[in-house]
Picture 1 (cartoon, chains in turn cyan, blue):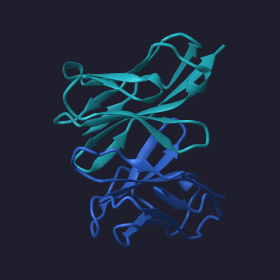
Picture 2 (cartoon, rainbow over the protein chains, first blue to last red; picture 1 turned 180 degrees about the horizontal axis):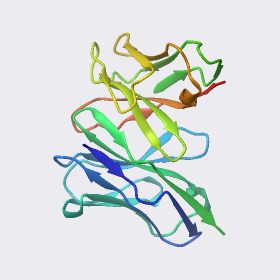
Picture 3 (cartoon, chains in turn yellow, purple; picture 1 turned 30 degrees about the vertical axis):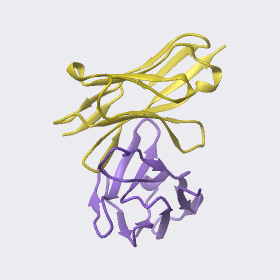
Length: 111
Length: 114
């Protein structure tokens, strides 16, 4: 069955430190891949997306993600976290017209 | 630009009551989706409509029905609400296959069933 897995339910990071969120997918072929962010009480905002080509994708708010076909992974990174990055992050995959999400990673930023 | 509009934003139902969640998009998108979001479970797909006139079950369709009224509108109906359906519901739309397959989300409907 197709699936999107985010192994880390909760991550705590200090402000200014680097952040990496993991995402693995299980699909027959490489799907379209996305990272979304959800701030408390808000809807989802797209951070970045990967369709093909360059495996390092730049997004908004200083985020980037790297696609690794051999590992079926699409990990999200940010070199220096700001307090406003505290939110829940969702990895998603789309194949044909079905869009599937991982369970999410809650990011807490400490001073 | 309105994007994806969901109504209502909040709703409290008694067990056994019925209601319809409305969703409309003004981006001429082909595909529309209904998700529910529960703590620790991410977004789970309830139903989707790949194009006008078609609907398909997602991961958790039981207890729900949908109608793709036209290209713009995709409604979700709870015929007999249960406490297990307490959740935040999100509607989304996207163009479908092609270069731009980014999904756009509504602001959500917070539903409580007592």
